[in-house]
Length: 131
Image (cartoon, rainbow, N blue to C red):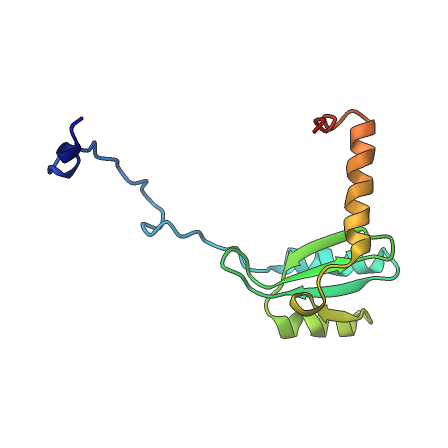
């Protein structure tokens, strides 16, 4: 193809757009629902030393509530708003923090590392490559 052929009308193959979706390429973000709330309630009841970390809305997700137990086990779910998340934690007698200010607790990262190591030992994950 010659350089100027790129600018000629009709020289590029036409690509059809998918039907039924947004034409702007944007995605639909699922809102919080009753299943999310029920999950958070049962998760808090089943663990001790739980703290809540409210994560702000981003370009790809709505407001989320990250719950972290004393041992680092965690769960994350969408919530209706920042205020709702703090109110939920207050009702459950769980301290809550703004994750954008305080960050994510180290015990959660440690928990993820332990789980990953256990899966590797069980043969569920490949060994890490030597570098």
